[in-house]
Image 1: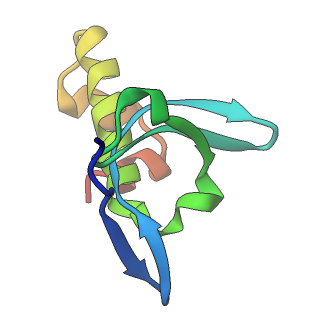
Image 2: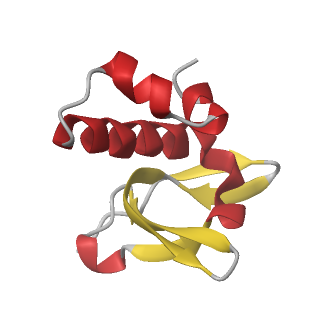
Amino acid sequence: MDSVPSLEIINEEKEYKVEEIRKHRKQGCGIQFFIHWKEYKNEHDQWISETGLTYVKKVIKDYWIRVLSQTYRRKGWTSNQYLESSTDNEKSLYQ
């Protein structure tokens, strides 16, 4: 028997907790994230648009930092080289 998933009250509405973002994709003019829900199995993971995830800004920020860090490590860049080549929007993630 599965346990009941955790819910948070956000803006007077019940919301399921996001455990992590696993990947992203462009969809139309926006971005969707592949979400793993806390206390759910992998088969419940789903694509959710960024606009539908306004209450998990820290999780989104942590995801982008992880993705960008992997990118510059793969290229063999130091953090200074990365920041020199980054856009202002990307740099704001590290502040």
